[in-house]
Image (cartoon, rainbow, N blue to C red; front, side):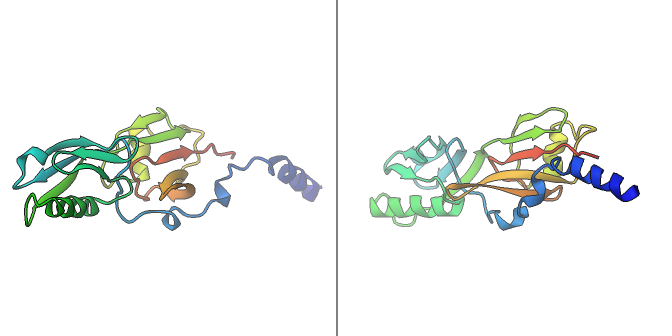
Length: 184
């Protein structure tokens, strides 16, 4: 009789999975450094070329418009790669022989937290933020939440990938975090 009861319980709950169990761990799809994307706001400083220094927003095509060198595609590039590209453009345009260029983030894409948190929504990204910090910003878990593991959807290159993350996993700009409901 006990075996029959257990079989009925397993059959009844067999379709009640969250789907998180089939996802790869986040570390397999992460990126080593932040890459710029449309909507990011950056500060550029060029020591010897004052008109180029200022704040820029990456447009929807992944480009910023700079004085003296016109448009520069920055989407998908790291800050160092953008610095090097600007320096190369300034040298090629014979504006300056050895430019000193600095690129820094001002405001990056927000993160989104959905599911079993008290205040789901859009939140500002902060460098070094973990899943735990993101869930905390959203008011913490609800009483129904499956704590300890969440699904994170992240753009890797030009593909969207979803993976399982722990509370210690680092969040990247634009990540979508889903906290699932626990069943028992």
